[in-house]
Image 1 (tube, rainbow, N blue to C red):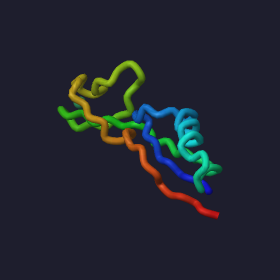
Image 2: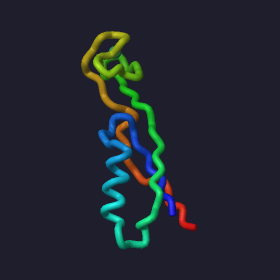
Image 3: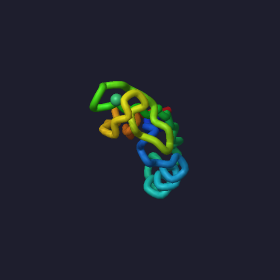
Length: 87
Ligand SMILES: [Zn+2]
């Protein structure tokens, strides 16, 4: 059994801790030996002022085009199960 997860760059989830909690939760169930597979989605922010989309650096989330601090996360905050493979 394999469980395919999609995790965005801004979702504050570390792969190892998800696998650890999974092993604890699934212990004794049919999903006990399931492998978790992770797909990472890069983050993207969009400026609310000029609508410019950009990938922010770790230290600066301001719009690189107009300098506005009014930015929204438009990609990268997802955390979902994409599919489950059952053998
Ligand atoms: Zn801007």
